[in-house]
Amino acid sequence: MSTLRYSVIGTGLMGVEHIMNLSVLKNVLNYDLEIVAIADPHEPSRISAITAASPHFNPMQFSDYKIMLQQQHTDVVIIATPNFHHVEVLLYVLKEYPKMHILCEKPMCTTVDDCRKVIDASQSRSGRLWIGLEYRYMPPIARIIEEVRAGTIGRLRMVSIREHRFPFLVKVDNWNRFSVNTGGTLVEKCCHFFDLFNEMNEGRAPISVFAEGAQNVNHLSETYDGKKSDILDNAFVLLQYDNGVRAMLDLCMFAEATHNQEEVCAVGDEGKVEAFLPSHEFRIGRRGEHSIGKVHSEIIIEPKVKFPGHHYGSSQLEHMDFYECIQTSLTPKVSPQNGMISVAVGVAAHLSIQERRVVYMSEILNS
Image (cartoon, rainbow, N blue to C red; front, side, top):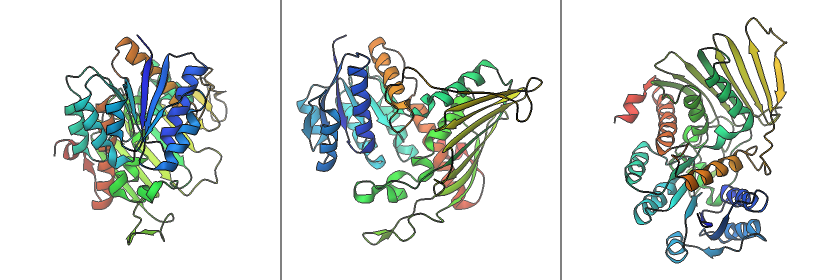
């Protein structure tokens, strides 16, 4: 296949990260690609993108993504606009450019209804649609998934993820301070974790969700255009699966004073595997072989990673697989269906908090 021509729509933090990863693929790993254009209505964001692309790429700049796609021949488009804008761009590209390949940042959309529209529009087209749930590619977490699937811990029974981190970053026009724009914290941030739960459990979706959460510390005094910020900053979320597996998320966004930001644990009837980031530590404990304080431990560093970026190299590994998917006509490893389910669990969790009850996924997916 000839050189893949990429364009990037939305050049904030993640758009720039995608540009830097594509630079590594081309100039360090010798992938045959070019970034031909970038689009963002915010001029400082465009300047940041051009700076990140230089000197390896010299993309054309546009403030309007539709004009960009009309004027620049593009094989692959990366969508990294604000969450609420994904559905507009996706539906336009899916309809107008059926051969164009798409990598869309998470969450795929902010509502399940919009996710359904995207899935419907993606049928019967040759272009691939890949959803950017790159946490699957974080090397220690990828190792957990591998060991669970290999049966190292026996039959999976429980999964837990703790993310204790810093508050949401400042974004252009403070769009991420409002749930209507993000889908809510448990969609915006936690779709990654819900996708991991599902991926570890044979790709299943949960049957029910129960959550408690609130906005207790962050952004309480922030008001924009007369509207108060309303994004949750902490939550516990419990998921139940039809095969008896249970999963729990512990999220706190005022806990940056910590050693590890993410802790992932999967427990089976024969043992336990754990991953810690950013320390990159991975542990295996097998019943009958190990005991408390005496388990196998190693540091997982993926030699393919040349640019760790903001996500421990996972974005680079994601791009490598996406490139291969396009070149070999493989099915995307992270599908629109995966994207919708990860959003639907977040929607269910927010409804559970609002109504103080267990929410069944059938309510969300069949409504």
